[in-house]
Length: 206
Image (cartoon, rainbow, N blue to C red; front, side, top):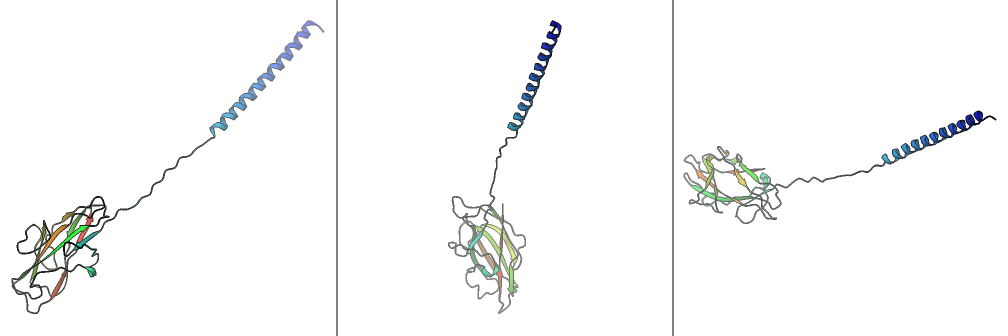
């Protein structure tokens, strides 16, 4: 064999060797890309959750300034203790009854309170009332304070003003608001007249 042929054969073998190396490298590159794809497919997750609970809002009242209970429906209304002669009225008589309201210890919001039109039964003609917010519990002819309702006929709450209640802190009841009902018999009061009035204090959370 001539040197030319020998050189050609060697170069040919070298060429095939280069192609094999190139093929191997290409295979290595493909394998490398496959490895990168596997790494990229790793994944992880993170979760977050929360529980939502509503607050509590309860109003309670007291006719004696000491024992507060819930009177949520008209049928369970607190009995006001009016002074004499509430059961033997004559024209121009005036009688008085104290009351207090507050928010319960578990209440989570302050409140704004509105006095609604009283529900009456029987004959309440010639009877009117004034409602006063007082500094302390008690109600008589000497009582003064912020007038919430002024000389309104029973069954109405004309011009009624609202008042605020503050929730308690550290598990305590809210601060009580003291009230005084003043009922007056007018000149038109009839003999043997009998009737009743039920007031509602409607509280809305702030």
